[in-house]
Length: 173
Image (tube, rainbow, N blue to C red):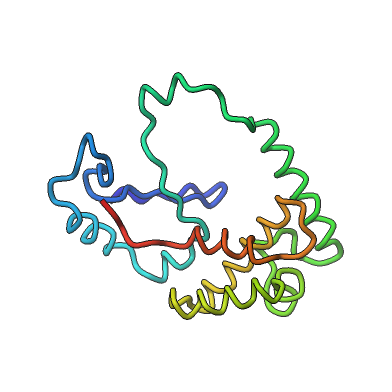
């Protein structure tokens, strides 16, 4: 199975199906979508629930290689991440918690509790997506981090919406 864990920073990667070509029109999987469903069913729900960000990344084509560089480069992204980490360090100073990923309980609700619109969206999504308690708190943590990256003091609806967009979706071809 192509599910690997990189212990240093907790990243996990998985191909969408056994052959790895699900969703690629040039190399379409001949057994899709059943192949993907069977392959992905091997990973348990509780394990998937522990993964905060599910992001599908398309293969790079030759045409992609000649495109101009992105508007925001690696240095700018690194600076935003460093700024967000320093905000988190200051927020959790004097406690054993260092980052949003570690905050829990009442302190999580205090620092990551969204505004009224965000709370309403999260409640609707929790019911529709059948979020577990673990999934719910992970969405809050990710939303708080997204707000930190945006420089926002309070978690808003837009941050909750983006955090929800990273939850696992059904496979498509």
